Length: 339
Image (cartoon, rainbow, N blue to C red; front, side):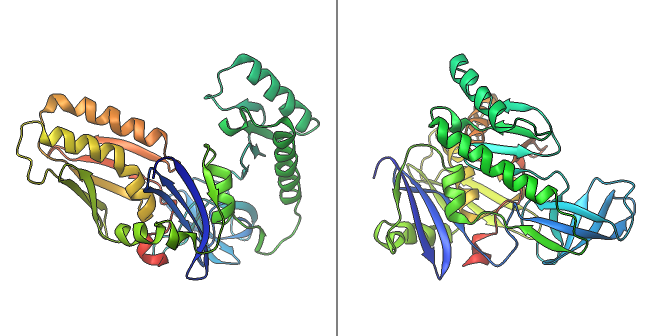
């Protein structure tokens, strides 16, 4: 099936959302019992970690860890926000730079100023959106970013989104409590789908749509490490304790260009394969043999694919053995842990 579909359903009683692009599972969100990214806590500082510039915090959901802090003692109260999922046996990762994000607007209490997404280039559109931003944030010292989805959206919808995020930000930041408390929960899969999958798509909300429209079959496929790259080529995406290993194979194609073709397909499909499987951390790609002069082409294709990805990923570069490495934020729980 061609085109984009957003399917909102439940999986084993958990809220779930799937993005299908041209019949392929491009993204998958499944709720879990872990604290959702975006959750804001009033936390109490616990033990600093000497030499690492971090500190443990007490939250209603257990221990959290805050990096890059100085001059904070034990027993102080902080507002922090969950930034991702904890690795097994580790504390919840949090940041003290709290933001409030919706489909069109992001309110940034600690970063004043009114800004627009750089992807909005039309001058008239920028002027209209900046006017909405000034009206919506008048009298506030907090900052605002209008996201790319606000371009072309109805002015009333953008204004309502700004007002809702501003009200939430003011309510949370005005908190004067003392003990550990959850001040606002992160968004669940259905809201995240509305918030972040903003491109035009058919939206399906009927119960059971995952089964009737092929999502369950695609999820079954994603539980296997093998990803078809076309023309008999494949890559295997496997999580180890230390890293995510990606192995690219050309299959039966023994032509001179087979390695380059398989590697370019890997570059285009790898971000989605990692998203759907919920994999992050260090990623090491063992590419198929190709001439060194083709490396720039591979990097350009991978960079283009990552620009469309909403998970922060750093292209670390080539190793002496010819592997390519990425460092990817753990923004999702591994699919194997959720199912």
